[in-house]
Length: 453
Ligand SMILES: C[S@@+](CC[C@H](N)C(=O)[O-])C[C@H]1O[C@@H](n2cnc3c(N)ncnc32)[C@H](O)[C@@H]1O
Image (cartoon, rainbow, N blue to C red; front, side, top):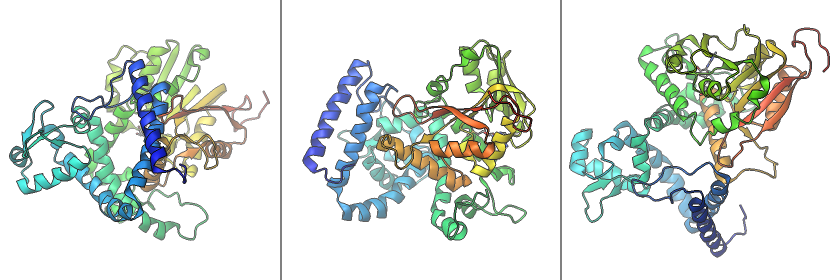
């Protein structure tokens, strides 16, 4: 951001970048974005498209700020829109407006009123606000009929995103409202953030447990089985978004030279339903994969069990806070450690380090955000995505996203003989996940005698 940027030069940059983006979309055979219901929901994860796109978002954000002005920003944006952008998306999702409007055609306010059992007057007012967010639109020429935009239509087509929004706005948002209160109650006067799972904004938002203790995110559905659907919904959202371009996991995991391992055992720790393990098995026929997760997750593994790679991918109930029973060539941790503050993450990693084969690797797939002073800071929207994920981790779990330096410190805290062999930063701008290869600097286990290699 240039503090001296002015209206005309930003406007000119936006025009130039829009032209470059359109040319690159044409060159890569990708459709041009449109707000119409049939508009493509995402851009290809291709550097030629993502670079101008991300720069355009940054310039357009500054332009929007200049055109808004500080006073309107604080009065309208902060004072009203921050609340009601979230509330209206929550209402549209909870009342499932997305499925009640046809993808081709329109629906009247009266029909939406009977489909949701809400007064028509409220339907109109909810949609008037949603229209300003480009979520649904009034049908051309008619004032009482509604059509989809590309944004609302995408929600109808993507149940996993409805699950993600359900989690974000029904569990995440009430917790986020308690962020300042949690800072006052648990953090003021401390040298570093507290790490206890029951001293989070979430714990302040959620009712106390039956035994009177504060709730944790992990007690959802365990303390009161009536809430188990929430945990299931969250797991579904995490699972379905795994292979999405936003995360970019498939690309970055391939940055490691799996075929160089030969016949090897890879343990996917906290591997969930096994979809990543199955993908690796398909691409690398010499690998045997074991998916370890909590016993309750085994049911979600059934798709892999009846798949073409079932012979090489199996499930094992294993709590990663217990000693690791397998001696693996690679322990893979995808989107696991960002859920855990350092003290807990060190315990998880120490069990794995103790069980590594000589020459083995722990491979961490997670965000590796640049430090504040990093000159190669990624574009605004990527920084905001990671900063938002970081605050979500803090709000729900007292956990965090880590910089490359944080990862180095964490690995050193496990054992000084563990080192980061390589960091594969997200290969395409716009993707979030990086790959961190951790190895033993010595051939023996961390608890045994060591010999330098
Ligand atoms: C965010 S999910 C990531 C799942 C998968 N690796 C992915 O990227 O989609 C975190 C995983 O850690 C698992 N998990 C949580 N606590 C665990 C524990 N104590 N032992 C083993 N797995 C655990 C969860 O069940 C879940 O599958």
